[in-house]
Image (cartoon, rainbow, N blue to C red):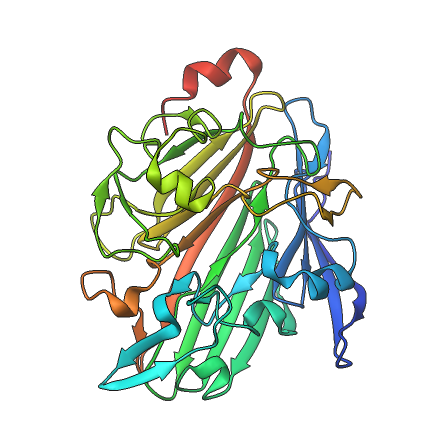
Amino acid sequence: MVTPAPSITKQPFGTTPDGAAADLYTLTSPSGLSVALITYGACVQQLWAPDRDGRRANVVLGFPTLDGYVAHDGHYFGATVGRFANRIGGATFMLDGVTYRLPLNDGPNSLHGGTTGFDRRVWEAAVVPPTPDSVGLDLRYTSPDGEMGYPGTLSVTVTYTLSHDSLRIDYRTTTDAPTIVNLTNHTCWNLAGEGTGTIYDHVLTLAADRYTPVDATLVPTGELAPVAGTPLDFTKPTPTGARIRDGFPQLAVAGGYDHNFALARRDSTSLIPAARVDEPTSGRRLEIATTEPGIQLYSGNMLDGTLNGTSGKAYRQSDGLALETQHFPDSPNHPNFPSTELRPGRVLTSTTVYRLSTEPHARAAGRAGRW
C-alpha cells in the first residue's frame, strides 16, 4: 500500500475592512492530522486530529470566517501574538535609558503587542518545499520602527511545519535597532473537540515547579514562587478543573488560571518537554516541547457565551485551554527575568512543537504519570 504524500492547498478567506485579502492554507499529513492556517494573524484556524478510534475532530477554537477574527480580536484564537506577547505593566518599559510608552489595551497595561498587534496584520505567505514526511508554510511580517510604540524595524518569519504527528512552529526575528521581542502562539485547545464543553477534565502536567505571581492587574510582581502546596501545582497529572474554584488569591484575581510558569531548564536553548494534556474520553494526548523559558496557562476565563465558533456553538467559560510558550510577561521591567532584548546583528530564534497522539483506554491511566 502506497502512503500518500503530505499536501498543502490554498483558498481565499476574505478581505479585511481596509481591503487586504487573507488566504487560508490547509496542510495535511498522511496520518490524518491536518491544520488550517490563515494569513490574518498568522493564525491556526482549525486543527483536525483523530481520537483513539480514528475519528477526526477539530481540537482548537476559532471562527469560521475572517469577520469573526476582525470583530473579536481580543480573544486571539490561534494567532501569532507580538511584538510582545502577554502583558507589559503600566504600558511602559525602558531600554538603553529611553522610556517607551505603549498603547493601553488591558486596563493600565499593554497586552499582546497593543491595540493593533501582529494578530491583526495580514502576513505574507510562502510554501516551504515539501519533504516525503512534512509540509510547511512560511509567514512573514515586517513591523516598522515605532509601530505600537516599539523601537526598531522588526522582521519576523513564522514557519509552520506539519509532519506525521506534530505541528512545529519556528520563529525567526531580526531588528535594525535595539528593541524587545516576545512571540507566542495563542491556540486554545479542546482535545474532546471544539464546541463540546469545558476542559475541566483535561489532565494537565507541567514541567514547572515555579510560577510568576501576579498583581491585581495580572502583571507579574517579579517574584518566582513555588507551585508546591498551591492549586498551580501541575508537576503531577491533575485535571484542569480539579482546583480551579479553590479560594486561592491568585485564582481569584485571574478568574481562573492565567499565569506564567517557569520551566525547569538546564540551559537556555534546548528543546525540552513543557506540558502534556490528556483527554480521557477521546484518548487524545497533546505534548508540547519548547526552547522558551516559560509557558502561560490560560483557562478560557473570558469566554462568556457571546462568541460562536467554527462549529456554530457558543464558547462559554473554560471551553478552551491555552498553553502559550513564551518569555516571562513584563520581562523588560524585571531584570531578574530572562531578557527579551534583541539587538542589530543578532538573529533571535525560537521553536515550539505540538505532538498529538492517542492512548488506548487500558493504557491511558497507567502512563499518565510519565513523560
